[in-house]
Length: 298
Image (cartoon, rainbow, N blue to C red):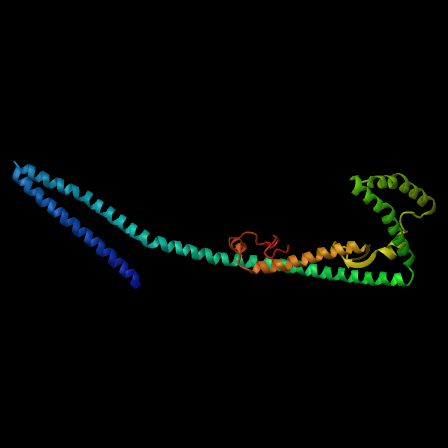
């Protein structure tokens, strides 16, 4: 038969409980002995018959189980209080340690997911931004060549002359009238365009196939728009499109913002902050939420 081996702490614990139980029981017996002695002295002095003497002894014997039960309850309550005092803080510490080790993997996942999301966003912004920037540079060089080789020169010169004429004889008088009287007469110009010029342009285009207020589409694509071939991420692969310099510039601004936002998300994810507490608790782990505007640039 195998013997149960107790550790030194278990032995000390049982020894302490034994001493407490023996001490309480000794005090109880001493108290009962004193009580019994006094009761016997009083009983003997006032006892008128032998029956009364034996009755008093019987009552004392009957009360012993109740007294032992009260002693057991006292010992149980004492042991419970000692256990709560010792084990309560220990249990709380163990719970905190368990929660800590459970939160570490969640924090790791939160940091990894957000850094990965920021890296993908920065890479996408950089790739698209470089493509757009290349298209803009190529367009600037192309339009400069077409101006000097004569293929688009006449269109540019006519636009310059018309712009000067419109600015001197229309925009400037409207500005002077507004400065003197406070009246904005731009609506008259818009009315003339809508009521006269556009209808005439429509009739001429129907008869000849040419507009009087804009160049043909072939001229616009060749001289005024920038040709670009790139993948726009819509699942259609690389496409060739014609956009104005301003439209490509807007796309470049968007890709730059996307790149900066992705880089900022990486750094704000690896720096300890309130986000770490949220990830430690298991919230917002997928990486899709925005990082706080730590750098003031988003």
